[in-house]
Image 1 (cartoon, rainbow, N blue to C red):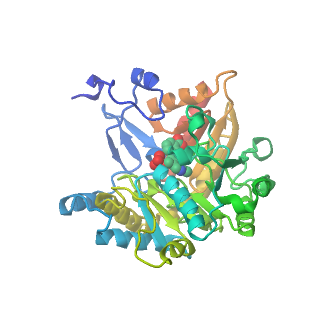
Image 2 (cartoon, rainbow, N blue to C red; image 1 turned 180 degrees about the horizontal axis):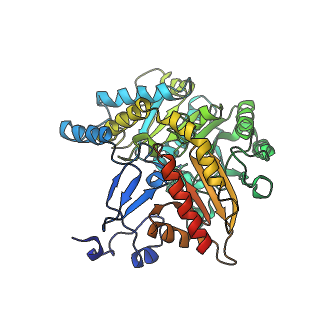
Image 3 (cartoon, protein in one colour; image 1 turned 30 degrees about the horizontal axis):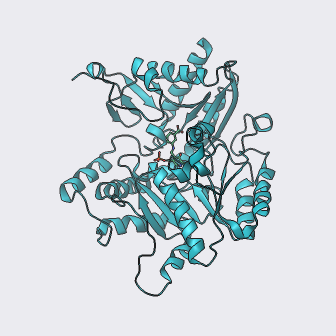
Length: 438
Ligand code: PXG
């Protein structure tokens, strides 16, 4: 059946204006390398790795073959009381690339599940070690931690909370966000101003008393809210304050993990080690849904140190370490390593930076920011219609053969790590032409 004859009625699209989309659908049905292809055969350059996830590029033969082979070998295996050897193998692979001392992995199926898992591990850990009063969680304004009740509670995106405001988990505070556009506009790499924003953590902790705080969760670079960088020294200061008060620090690396910032994780790129890392997306290069929570040895060992053989953590998913996800994960990690894709991201970062900043003087551009292969161009909103210019750009760029991600009036870029200079040039020149004609 041809795509344009499809009924669009049944599918309720996530995080999308269904009515607007169904009037002007943007459909893709094939993908290879840096490109999507529309049902009518048009080529669309993917500058967002699907949705920040296809880090190895689309249709990588090695990953495709691994998934096919696993589907034929064993469709499903339970991990409640049973095990599949390959799952143990990929957990070892992840521990190998994680920061030192983070050698334990809990598998989930998405970023949202990774976040809620991490929050539950943090709360349970405090109880296990005899600090049961540590129940409060601290997130950050403009943070995105998925859509579970835990995730939206620590998250700081007003629209994501608005429809559920009476149903948040209790005992959550928020740090101020770090987007100081007046001081830091057009920063290349990490911005100079704003380290003092981390000190607000000290105030929140003192307000409630440290003995009541379980964990702090932040994205090292905030993604969904428009690619907001941590000011220089900010993450290190958060770490210091957490250490001072014996509070767990969780880095949500669902976007920043697996090469996005030119290293395995942001934790290594920024040399700040959290206690827990949440991942998903690039874990399997977006090919099969999967998430993973990486946990420090002290935390895991606390759960394992009790006498007896009781279940240590009452948590898990039917599809934790699903064989297809495991096969995809193993192949994706091998591709990243064998093709040196994280290193490649680091090498392309300055080229990416120059290309994005070449848009500085184009119409409506009020900021350009970047780190690794993560970048944003922020546009001035149309008076009284925030987001309208962004929405128009999604359509115009797609019509011109370019896929970007827009949050409000900020255009986000997170290309597959296989991007060549020619792709970058095509993306930037397409955008330039469209901005000039708006
Ligand atoms: N944490 C972070 C930091 C994320 O970026 C999640 C958790 C949730 O992951 P799942 O797999 O449950 O979606 C994410 C997801 C956007 C956009 O437009 C970003 C995400 C998802 C959809 C859109 O920036 N990030």
